Picture 1 (cartoon, rainbow, N blue to C red):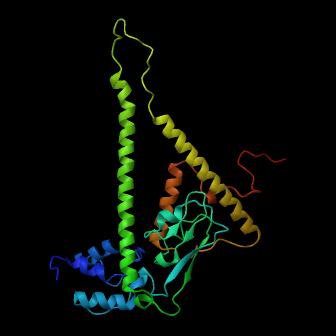
Picture 2 (picture 1 turned 120 degrees about the horizontal axis):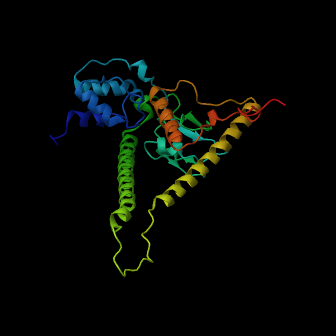
Picture 3 (picture 1 turned 45 degrees about the vertical axis):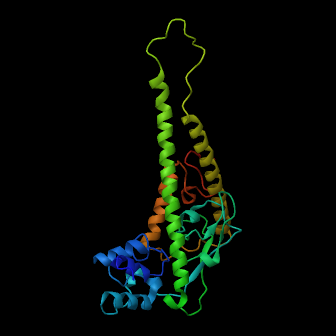
Amino acid sequence: MNNSRTLADRIEDLLPQTQCTKCGYDGCRPYAEAVAAGTASYNQCPPGGAEGVARLAQLLGKPVIPINPDNGVERPRPVAFIDEQVCIGCTLCLQACPVDAIVGAPKQMHTIVKDLCTGCDLCVAPCPVDCIAMIPVTGEATGWDAWTQQQADEARLRHDRHQARLAAERDAAEARAAARRAAAAAPAAATPATATPGASTSAAPSAPSAPAADDAEAKKKAIIQAALERARQKKAELAASGAGPRNTEHVSADVQAQIDAAEARRKRLGMASPQDEPAPDAPKKDDKPA
């Protein structure tokens, strides 16, 4: 037996690894650490259900208590479903999925890998065209009756790999940014104060790489804005036919935080959100009455 395992390690082993954040933490590991530290209760995991609370209570030597309703309710396990006729390929759902259960690419139709989905709900709210629904797939089985230890272990591994990939991407982005800053500063540092007599002046210093990066960023913004415009038109068509947006009720604070983060990213990129666009027949601010 490995005696070096901490209490947080043992608590994490008993969690379903859906990484849904319904417990109020960014994932199962942070929640396990909070329970071990006594800053969170052991009844904040709806996907684990009553059985999950009982497991944690036994480990901690505490009484079995109901799940805190502020964190949600025990329910049959759902799987995300993408309406591929409505998907615009914006990739926001890919960014939200904690276990890489969504396959797709920018401007390409996305799809859910059913066997990998943990039913966390995190992909639903960020979708700008409301094309994702959560479909129950376990009948009346809920909690650990709807989820196996093998599924939990596999989800945990995928989440760890997902986090490692994000960390590597952040490190690579920081390295590229540092290289661009160094390249931009190099010409100024290399320019001599006075020209050497007789030296050739035909060679000009290399231009910084920033303009090329700016062009690529502008192209990216244009592509995403075009996709969002198509989404706006699709929403207008749905509204005209009496079909309103889906998946907008009972949004948790954690999911709302993801929506807010996505909106903040759009604003940083200078893009308008679909809901900020005027309806097709709405007059613009500069329009004057006929």
